[in-house]
Length: 194
Image 1 (cartoon, rainbow, N blue to C red):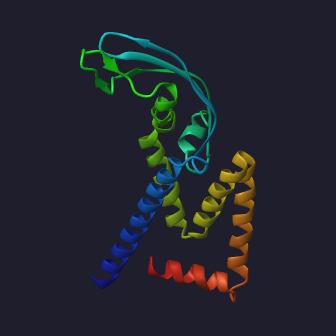
Image 2: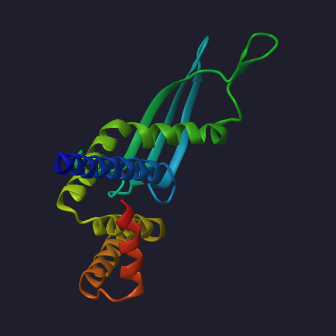
Image 3: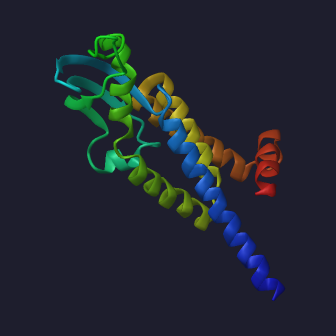
């Protein structure tokens, strides 16, 4: 009974770590620089209707392939094109006319949110499969490779991902073969609890 209970706790612990890292990567995806890089986003038209407005905007956005793997699998890792949305007024004036905020620059964040969040749930599921695979094979050092790749994206976009993954891989090899160094001891102490 005790063996089954220990095994169940170990499996549950791996599932919790996989879920936490999945959510961490989804959260990183919402930060400019870490999750995406905006080359351009601008409003192309804003047509007022009676109770709403039809907004059209163009966007050129590159997603970090390590935190948006679902987008890259679909072939949508670099979005360039026109989009439209229905825009509901922020308020109404005293005369009953709709008020739509501070103009195109004020609506930038809403346009950007649409561009970066369209596939959040499938992306979360994809990240869960990836992190669960990391937990099943028992190589949590892969998380360091993924995080360093994401940090590389911040500085050099796609080339930075490659640079970060290479750096993380070299550090992983260092952790594997040179056991008596402060970095290895720190890494082992972090994961001893999980």
